[in-house]
Amino acid sequence: MSSTEITRETSAVMDEPREQPATDDVVLRLEDLVVEFPAGAGQIVHAVSGINLEVRRGETLGLVGESGCGKSTTGRAIMQLPRPTSGSVHFDGRDLASLSAEEVRKLRPKLQMIFQDPISSLNPRRRIPDIVGDPLVVWGRGSEKAKVVPEVLRAVGLDPDQVADRRPHQFSGGQCQRVSIARALVLEPEVLICDEPVSALDVSVQAQILNLLEDMKARYGLTLVFIAHDLGVVRNISDRVAVMYLGRICELGPTEALFDAPVHPYSRLLVSSIPSMEGAQRGEVGTGEMPSPVSPPSGCRFRTRCPLATERCASEVPEMREVAPDRFTACHHPILDTPVEASLPVAGAAPAGAGDPSTNGSAPAPADS
Ligand SMILES: Nc1ncnc2c1ncn2[C@@H]1O[C@H](COP(=O)(O)OP(=O)(O)OP(=O)(O)O)[C@@H](O)[C@H]1O
Ligand code: SF4
Ligand SMILES: [Mg+2]
Image (cartoon, rainbow, N blue to C red):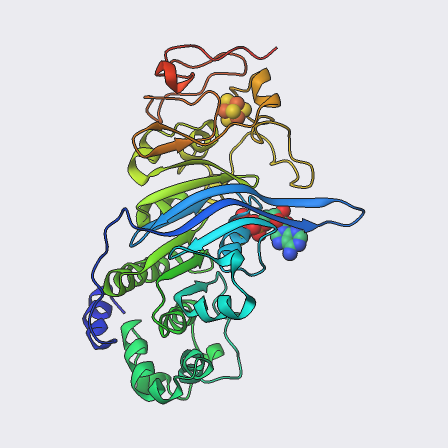
């Protein structure tokens, strides 16, 4: 089904489109968010280590980074699934950590999540209209099912009559992802966290699902947190992008600015690999493997792979700071005013434009000894 048809069909869903809110209105604020897991023998997996991040109402915030860097854990921590080890998640101004389990449960309709594998995330024994309508029943709105479920099915491009007696195994991955999206939308969420929603789909189907998400976002005034390691997909759909490495955010900024001239060495290696390296599509860079989150490096966690690492990088954790309007990075030697085409120098030699932002990048980074 084409996105044109999908757009036309959205007109039946719910009452009126929500107004697009101002972009400086923060809907989610993560403060010093930490998620740790026990790893046996007294060890700890430092999956997410002190993330500070604001998600603006109505935006699509892309979250990228290589496998195991903590993207899904961050998404689930926003949902309080499970509750973070420490730190807070403010949703619509309320600190979810301070709420009881029941209070968090009541807010859950407003915060929904969709996953990578749509087929396994749907109950194989349930018919499609029941899968989509179940959340209404759970929330005591079962009487609305007959009206709302066909509307939301049409909105995601599925014919309610054709899917009435069908079950998930009778559908393709793309159609199942439409069902997942319908199920997430039926409660009219404010925020939709999409965890690799197109990674398992064919490229042509990916485009349809991305179009659908854009349509739904515009229609309902949704805020999207879009987790993916395919940089091309993230670039296409995101207003801003946050780059994660080993449990921390290393760069945050408007999509085009970040892709045109990344300021953090990791983002730069990631972005400059597109599309020549297959690994870049998996969010990898060609400078060895990411260290274990059980024993992350001291100071800057990227220092063991960073061509610009200095002694300071081993001893001092780089704090997130604004290096240009609306552009933030956690790096002692950010690469300023340098397009992505410019190559990175080797270890110990700072690039033109690398340095402390207070010097506007004119001072060379100290050499690593
Ligand atoms: N329940 C858990 N128990 C122990 N370790 C976990 C648990 N969940 C995640 N981890 C670990 O936390 C780290 C971050 O995992 P996470 O799934 O968030 O990464 P990711 O960025 O989503 O990776 P991918 O791109 O492969 O989905 C990994 O080292 C992972 O093994
Ligand atoms: S220059 Fe230092 S702080 Fe910046 S990414 Fe490299 S190791 Fe980290
Ligand atoms: Mg993941």
